[in-house]
Structure formats: C-alpha cells, structure tokens
Length: 262
Image (cartoon, rainbow, N blue to C red; front, side, top):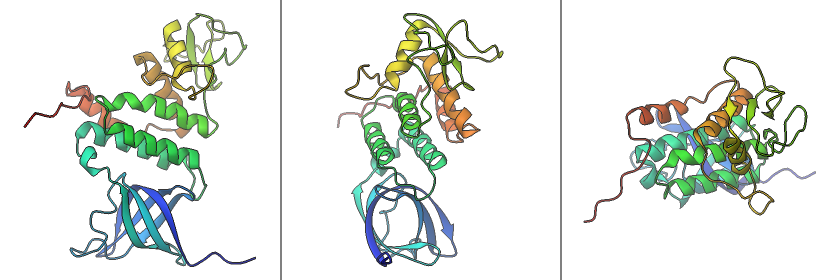
C-alpha cells in the first residue's frame, strides 16, 4: 500500500485560529474532501507574511499543504471566496460565528462530509445578501442535523406515528421529534407548537425537490424548538448564540442597515 504524498492541495473554510509561539498560528479548517482538520501557518503573524489577509475567519481558501509529523503545514493560501467585507457587519459576524461553531462542535476531525461543506459554504454565501441574517440559522440547524443523522421526526408523532393533519405538536427532545397532544412530554419547559408551527417545522427541514416545499424562515416557536433539539444533541448551548441574543436585545433585531447612496 503506497503512502500518501507529502504535499497536497485542498479547498477549505477557515473555522478558527489560535496563536502558537511568537509568529505561528494553528488553524482549524473544514476541507471540502477532508472534513475538519488542524494545520499550522508558520510566520503568519509577521508583518511581511505572504499569508497576510488570506486566512481570515469564514473565508474559503485554496490551500497547499505539506504533511507533518503532528500537524500539516500550510505552504500556500489563495482566497477562493473572501467573507471579511460582509462579516464586519455585526449581524453577519454574529450569525457566521453560530454557523461555524455548530460545524466545529458537531463534526468529528478528518471525517469527510462534502454535504456539510456545501451546506456551510451556501449558508455563508447567503449571509452576504440577507437583510436579517439570524433568520437563516434555524434551517441551517435542521439541515445540519439531517445530514448528520439527528433530524427530528416531523412527518408524524414520534411516539405513536399518528399523522398531525392540522394538529398541534410538542417538541419531544428525548424521543427525537414532534409528539402529538396525547403523547406530549409533560416537563414544565416542554415547547408547544401550533398547527402552523408544525407545518413550518416540516418545511424548514425539507430538502429541495422533495414532496414538501422548503421554508427558509422559521416562526418564533419553531426557531425555539429547533434550537432546543440542537442544544440537546450538543449537550450545551453554543457560546456564539449569545452574540445573537446580545444584538437582538439592543433592539436592532439583527437587521442590517441599507447602504447610503453616495
């Protein structure tokens, strides 16, 4: 069996970075073919580094790498799609951090997930033109859960398989889906869904071209339920979600200002 080549190229999205020593930086990246992995960029923090501006958060980059003993070394980086001009907007910045943290938290290292790469790439691109970026989060969350095999059951009651057919539902986190009135969980904090919310939940996670027409936006109740399922599977709430909460509490409602005509 032949050993892998010492140098290789890949396309990746920058998830995060951390400093190492005086001039180096270790990046956590999500590769189109390799999934999540760490690599080191040597001398990237020096003023005259040839990596300057090419490994920014959420940017999609074409990388050249050399296989190392512990970490692969980034030898070249070319920006395929920059995100920084859009991400400097607070609403986009906060939402992008939520999307990236979910990928980082859910995806195991070096597990090739091209569907996840396409999902993240598409969602980050959509943020650039979204008037209210936070509204993109619930569908992204459900699509990610679906790709990873954690999608909540919504077609019928998760416990008795009774079709909802205009009925209300309840988010049943332990059972992994939406429960009907008869099977509803009885916890004090159980989340109720009106019939319109159940329909919205079903459409929010639907694939394009399927029997259910996809929805891009979530009702407030559906958004809370989706968030609850994500937190349940992660075992915690993503830290970056607080950025969205903080911006929403300022009264800005995460809506971006329209550009002023020059």
